[in-house]
Structures are given as C-alpha cells and as structure tokens.
Figure 1 (cartoon, rainbow, N blue to C red):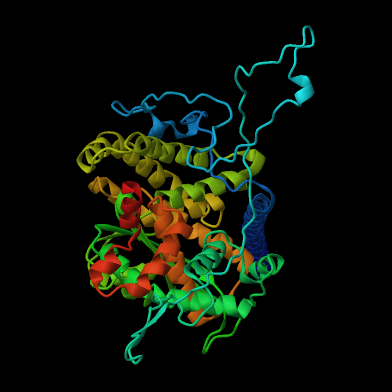
Figure 2 (figure 1 turned 180 degrees about the vertical axis):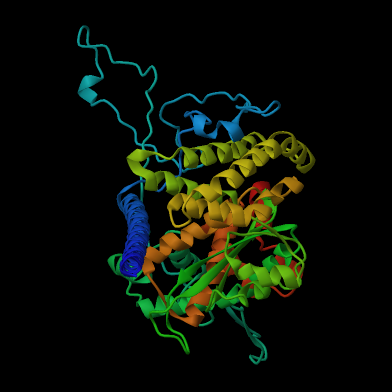
Length: 530
C-alpha cells in the first residue's frame, strides 16, 4: 500500500511537472510568435519608411530640377535598348527597325543672314573729303571706280500721330437748304479717340507679346500721351465684343474638322460672382484644321468640371485628342466621341522618373523613353505624307514597337511600387493605353496633343506678366483676342497687320460673306496677291 501511494505521488508530481512544462512551452511559443509578429511589423514599418524616404527624395530631385534645371524633355537615345534583367521581353524582334532613316536635306550655309529685301532702305553715303580726292604723287583728280556696300539694321521707336478726320460739307448755292456732310467711316469703337491701328497695337502688345496694360501705360506716357490703364482695358473689352462674329464663324468651321485638340489652364478672375478672388477659373483651348486653315480658339469657363466640354463641343461627332483628365469622359459617352491619348504626356512621366532617379539612373524608365522615342522618330519621317501612307507606315513600323512596349508594361508594373515616380508613369501608361494606341487606327489621327499645348503656351507666358483678369467681361474679351491672334499666327499672318485690317473692316460688314473675307487665310491670300 505504501509503495502504491508513493508511486501515485510520483505520477501526480510528474503530471504536474509535465503540465507546467507544457504551459511554459506554450508561453514561450506565444512570446516567440509575438516576437515574430513584432519583427514582421518592424520590417513592414522599415520598408514603408524606406519607401517614403525614397519617394520624398524623388520629389526633392524633381523640385530641384523644376526650379533650377532645364524644362526641355530632350533625352539621350544612345544608351542600350535593354539590359540583362529585361532580356526576356526586350529581345529584338525581326521586322522592327532599330533606326529610321530621315530623308537627306541640303545643309544651309552658315553665316550672317541677309536683311530682308522688303525692308525700306535709307542710303547713307560716305565720301572722301575734297582734299583727299587728288593723287598724292602727281596731283591728278581721282576718278570714282565703284563703291563698297554694307548694311545695318536700324530701329525707329514707335511714334504717335493724330488722324485728323476732315468731313467736307456741301450745300446748294441756290436754295441754301440742302446741306450734305461726308460720312465718317464706321469705327471699331464709336466716339473713341482710338484708331484701328492703336487698338491693334495695344492688343498685340498684351496678347501676343505679354506686355501688361500698366506697362503699356508707362510706354505711352514716355511717348507723350497719357492713356490710363482703365481706358486701355475698356478698349480691349470692346474689341473682344467687336470680333465675336469672326469668332463664331471660326467655331462653326472648327466643329466640322475630323479631329479637335483640347487643353485647359488656370486663370484668376478677381471680380467673379460667387467665387473668392483667390480661386482658379480656367481658360480652355481648342485647335483643329489643316495647316493652311488652322484654327485656335480660347474659351473662358469658371470651372474645370465635366459641364465645360459639352459646351465647347456642341453636337460634335468626331475625334478629340486630350490629356488624361477625366472631365472629358461624360461628353465622350454622351456624344459617342472617339478619344485619343497623348503620347507626349506618357513620355513626360517617364522623363520625370529619369530625373527623379538622379545619379542612380533608371533602366526601366530609360527603356520606356527609348521605345516611345522610336514612335516619334517614325512620325518625323512621315511629315507631309498623305493619311493612307501614314496609316500603312504606322502599321508596319509603329505597331510592333507598341506591342513590345505593352508586353514590357504588363511585366514591369507589378514589380514597381505605385507611389514612386516610375510607378506613377507605369500606372498612367496602363490606364491610358486604349486611348494611346488609338492613333494607329487612322492616318489622320495625331500622336500627341502638342498642338493644343503649343497654342496655350503664349497665354501661360502672358499670365506670368499680367497675373490675373479683373472681371469676367475682361477675361472673355481676352479669350476672343487670344483666339484671333493665335489663329493668325498659326496661318503665318502677322498679327498687327491682321488685327488692324479686322478692326478697320469689321464695323462695315453687313453679310456673313463679308465676315468670311476677314478670316486669316483669306487675308493672307489677299496679301499674297498684292
């Protein structure tokens, strides 16, 4: 009995020790699991912090480049097309040319350009004094055997003159009751002291040359005439209203074009109902038409919402070329528009990824820029060819490059953190892909939206000088005047001469046919004939 009791105590003690050991093991296992979870959490936090540091460093490099670097997007295309890490999707494919031949051209001779023959010449004759016109050896009078000619460009500052309108009066000498006075031609601004030439000068100085009205006021004072800024502003508002019929006709013709480029940029309007002065409104631009009848139209809108595109594209059923802004989605769906994506915007994001990488370089960004560069090399060779030939060449040469880029995109995108500059570039390329490849379907379609961006650039440059518009009437007038000036420039017409002609003739018109004669290409044809 004692032995059995002793064994029972031993078994109980062993069980207790076993339970204690199991509890200890479980406690240690729980602690180990907690340590593992803490380690994983710390690793995630460290990875997140490293990623955040890398992203901030990228942003810092981009900000430094934006502040101090060049704005041009030129890239070096001499680096290798792919490296070993990407060899599986970047091996050269048969039929895809690595280089595209640009047609040869004659190299222009370097040196000083001759001054234009159409400029007026003022002869300044330099002759010898009389005492030097005799031979020093025998005293014989020298004979003129020729002359040496050189030319200098001379600038005469703007001069102010007064147009004195003298209206002749006639009366019947017999009855002395019938009196007739010669009529004064219709003026752009009735009872104003501003002539068409003055209005054209002020408009071109501000909207083509970016010279704010307050600076023009100082210039006029220096020339001897006080013209307050408020007066100049009122003149521009009335000129903007005057040319509305020409703008309407240009819009009618723009909406008949197969492809329209659109873009927008901010503008600040101080006195706008329901909006604080510091808020942004927007200036929209549309560009379309063949090279000999190019149209550029600016339109003001208080917002950048989806309500603006339908107003700018009433009943349009063609193709629009725009950037990645989703405000065009509704109008494309409602009006069944074809939307093209801009390869320049896609390339720009990879160029930013190159800049963000700094000294470390980015083989992936380099590769994307290289392939997109091939598409642009092809477009350069196709300048001037007809739409059918451009479509054929794109299918033969651009389509394989696009397919290669897409295969690389699908493999690379999951490997790159989305918050990095490269990740954002890949996301944009992926999201815009169906729109980007749309240009391959028709030779008339452009590869990018540079036409609209180039048209809006003069406005952005001018905005840096005049900063804001005072009223809605002022910004709408600015939109009309920018439209007419940029359309004239796009058609190779000198803006001042054109505006002077429009301001002179538009008050006299009575029919739509008369307005058509004031369009820039008709003005150019008249100049060429003369």
